[in-house]
Amino acid sequence: MKSRVSDTVILVVGLLLTWELLSLAIGDYILASPGATIVRAGELLRSPVFWGHAASTGIAFGLACAIAMTGGILIGLWLGLRRFAGDVADPILGTVYSIPKITLYPIILFVFGLTLSAKVAFAVIHGIFPIAIFTMTALRNTAPVYRRTASMLRLSPAVTLATILIPAALPEILTGVRIGFAVTLLGTLIAELFASTSGIGFALLRAAEIHNVVDILALTMLLFAFAAIVNAALHAIEHRVQHHG
Image (cartoon, rainbow, N blue to C red; front, side, top):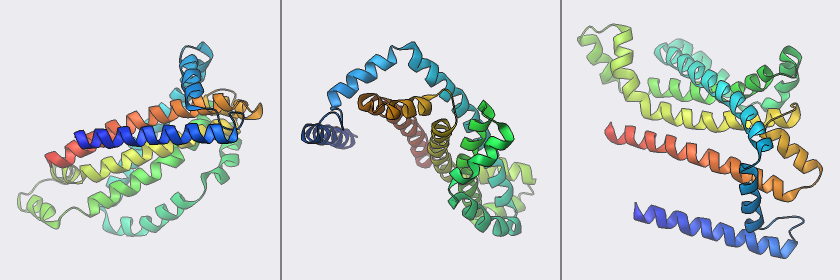
């Protein structure tokens, strides 16, 4: 644990020093210094305007996460329990997941218009596929002995799934959820960049239009901090489940 903390500290300090040297070398007009960025991030956290944008992003992201995680896990469980359906769906899901989602955004805007629903839908199509794929794969990779044991005990499919298969597959399912969280956040921000009147993505776009480098970096830093904290929490849960298993 101490080694991991020290490695993290060394990495952060090294990144900050590199950032500072680059800022000095190319000028803060192109790359604001770490100090200026941190100060500006603190100012944003005290700004009602920032929290208005954060609330807009948070609502869309929260709804998208709920839909993507619930839908992805349910789809993955269904495909994982049905070997033929899973074999058919596996390459389809992989192909759809590899398609750049931005190509679908005009269709989403046509269907939903410039609304919250469009942001949520665009974010969902980013997150639902990796969660479904990981869940399906996790269930299909469970040791056959689990299914044979359930059959010998004459457990119903629902009981087998709830008490044997899901617990066995849970670590890999959580990995899919962690990846799904990251890409759902990415989808939300991309949606706000291209067609939105509020949100962190919209604020980033406006800062870029006026070449406000310090605001761009401060907003990016805050987003990174949020994503890193949640990802670390999910990783800790995943590690605990694996250790417990």
